Image (tube, rainbow, N blue to C red; front, side, top):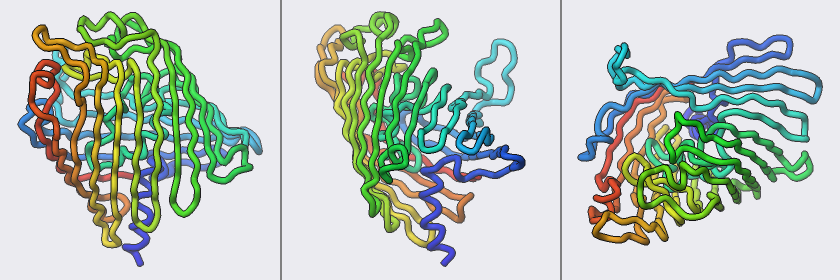
Length: 374
């Protein structure tokens, strides 16, 4: 019975994220939880940039306060510490341990009317893209990129969310999002964005089956279009994206598939300095949670760049694969807090003139890790 309960609880906690938290305070309508994850992991690859220790610590703080019978205030903060670097970080030393803020937002929830928050959060494209970003180590990188418009985690996001369509339709959720301009001089050109908006909707049909779709459109900054110092920088004044997906999550089985297209949005190549004019993206994943704790995983992640207008000075490249790998891995859960994992990214890209010129790796990567989380 214990193993059967674990098989149900573990996937739910991984999806919920902060749901697997330790309560540290709950009094007079005020609640404070902490979340944490410590991962010791190592990657093996002929690609030296991917090979080596990749250990880290991640922690979060989630707070709620009961403002009135219908109004709840909330906030969430999550940070990550790199544990693979040397301890010292003195003057002139940039090799020391580094810290980054992953999420930081606050907002209000008003009964069935929905919630509104602002800060560093997930973009609405990730409402669908996150369905396949569940692999033991890799995944979620055909078009989902950090600080690239509303594809994944990003700053300056104002988000309205509504669950069960104002309490009238069970399982029908939607979100509307606005992203303010991020064009400061401390950002790389490809990490900047103009004003943009997006929306997403998901519908739980019952019996574990869900459908979803999302769309975003944003202004592009001059740095994004012309400040990269490279040939390929996308065309047009706007960065647009649309994605749709389907997933099945029941009876210890998890299946998900998404398809998306981006325009003037997806970065690629050395230091992500290039922007594809168009991409077509597919992600497929299948997992099964055994009662005794083992969860094998199989996935395919693919991105095809179109109208790249990229040249290395000798060859002109127009339509090329940017991402293409098969992923085979597994998690083993000892309980809800402790697990081990292995993940094998089998790269399907060939080493050719394009991958060499753009600096796209074609090597396989194997990851192993041990994880404690609460």
